[in-house]
Length: 490
Figure 1 (cartoon, helix red, strand yellow):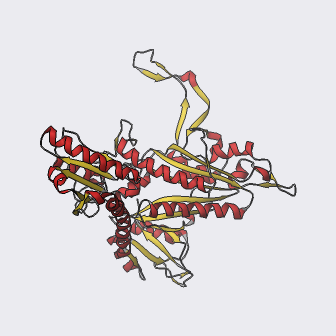
Figure 2 (cartoon, helix red, strand yellow):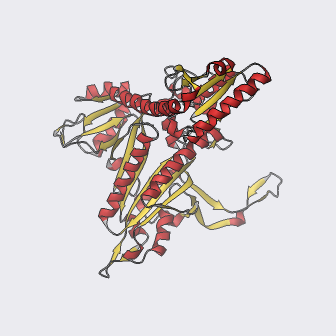
Figure 3 (cartoon, one colour):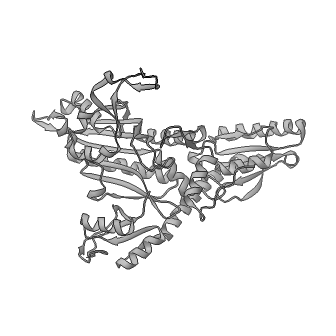
């Protein structure tokens, strides 16, 4: 029998950790804070990666790869950048081990100290802009639109599978432009691509907005983010895009000759999403039965399970099941036929519900006689019987309905958990309930920090659709120009 999960209502954190492991997505490794992404989990990440990669290339970006190790001196060139990442950096100081002459095992060879220490990349702006200095001389070399799929290391103290790990997978885009307007357009274009992916493929509604100065990426002049609401009422930052201005170009002396022959510094953007999206996907849709996957990102959208007694019935059912499998695959549906004889059908039903397969087809000897097949939806757990002759149309229709239903359900949940606070007492009560809270803010970092210390809520973003609306700050009572979005967050 498949493993039973702790209830979300009883212990949301425990439910999440169990689900990640029981559904064979990932597990903790022998290295503290690092994870092993298992084949089923990695298959979901590959689907995400493939769709995002396609969207990046459709907008003119190319993939490249840059070194894992960054000379420490590169970080000191952009002061706010090094300050932002200093506490999270892993540093390589030596390049060799040797046997301890006192017989105490392996030790670091003191004679193998590096001339310059190396940082294991927490992000790649510094190494990439040192490279761009060699690539850019003229306006003819611009724009440069590069994306990298890579791993990064940020030395986290408290980790959780997918959501916050010491090493994680991501993509990071780094672009170079001749004008401020082009770099800003790029920054906005990419956050909108992330939003389109989140809503269209993950079925996860998001709020697009800009970060406050205190929440910006280290070294950025402006950071755009997409913010999603998880089922426990906490926000999750699902993707960011940064307008870097000319900061890194000046730090690494990246200039170009304009058409008029003048020397100017290049304008820049960077943007990224990571395997944190896996955590967002899990927490947006899943339930106490297990994982719930949008069809567009499921490793297989349909599983066919034979119901039989004896080898002869299995053989007869398999003939029809394989025909159904081929028909669906010809329609672009990914299908798994689970004909293992090591587990009973009931065990398989529970297993695929736990793994979130969108549709389960059950086919037995009686179905062969009636020309029917049973279909179970993972999102609603509803079952229905259809004629095998019409199975292709029904499956394609149901997959579309499931994708649509998951987005609608998540959007309805977010709407029900979105509030507006007009007083600080009201604000504190709403934050305790969990969810998004819109409130007036006076624009000062002091107020932002005091609210954070008092309630653990942060300004997730200044929404892009936030209109100028004069009022008074919910905390200080001072003049405020607009409402911003608060929440407790991962």
